[in-house]
Length: 590
Image (cartoon, rainbow, N blue to C red):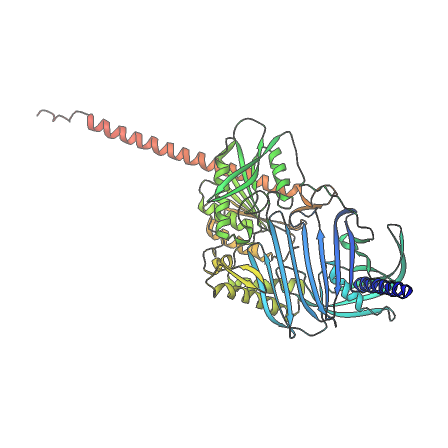
């Protein structure tokens, strides 16, 4: 009897062990985790974790990427869901860092696709886009989106195989239909962390996109390596979970010719923070205010403002640059800031700069970039005493009709087909209508919170006028058109500035320079930044010197004219007094 009990107990233990083993086996089969190191320009800049889940009716790919070397948005999370037959269901992605955040949501139901993208205090959306079944979702910056392509590639057949896909390539635009081709070119052994992994090398080609290369494990079809040679990007699998430490900081420019200090100032109820660059020499100096507007703006502004402050600090200028609302050390909410409030911030910064002990309030110039050029123009139009304003690649407020025309211009430049151009314009129209027909400041679209007030403010005409600048010199500088912003905007601003200021302005084109007028630096030590081209700083300085000379000459002429008028008035008064005091003329005797 005892033997029977022992045998029964042993059988029970074996069954439990088999059940537990089967559970872990099934869990391993239905869930996988992949770790990667990201290398750019020969430097490790971040890490990626991808978790794949397979359930009875769903395939889910989650990704978390950490990029400490990114200048603003340093972390990104995404979730991509298909059904078991690889029909796309949804995609969500959120990027965040330094107070800023961006969100993108895409949902497909009954062969109709809807999306919403939120960035800063703006959004774009479009609903009910007809799509065919079997389309994958591809985002070049997200390695997790490549896994379904690899899982559906027939390795036995090999050669070139094409897939229909939707490409999320811009936060400002709807997803684009693309054709993705994977081509097997060779088998190759890769040595990764002591593992000698047999892989199959695949070329990834997409029209109007740089060619990439995938190395896929022959054993489990996982991605071992991903490269985009033209971008000097390499993502490599890690088999051991080890901590990757990074010490990325903002690029620091130092020179004994100037000092830098942390400052704060108020804009209404909001406290903003910035950096004040002051020449070491005694006395008062000309001053420059820098205003950014491309994406979430901190005081470094992708390195452009740090670099400009260094250049102008060495040349003897007082320079102020500041974090936008809710970014860096500034208070406020960047997701709920209107153009009007951003303009008030620029005016507050201008007043703070003019009040500095070493700043000459009679010699101040404002420099704005992208949408910051719009804020600079608005601020100068309202704040008297500014000597001039420089607008770099200006992005001004546009009417609805002009926005749609801009999309046509971009479509021609980018080579979009007619169907996608119509889709982009439909998204612009639906976005504006969402704001136009709502009385609320916020709304929820696909579960994403969208701020309507900024868009409605533009529609209401409060920020419609592009430029109303007083009679001060204006400098327009346009670089190479390497962003989805039309050069046409500069010609529009040129004509309007001529009308407002009587041709008292200059236009310069720097076709050899990129959007941020410099070289993008990745040294493996600092956050990505742009080292400004000396030619740009030279152009601005030459124009500023001319502006101050013109202002001085105009002031001297005005003072001379005033003195002359005063002298003539005094002479006339003296003559009148003399005539009044003279004795009356006596009549000669007969």
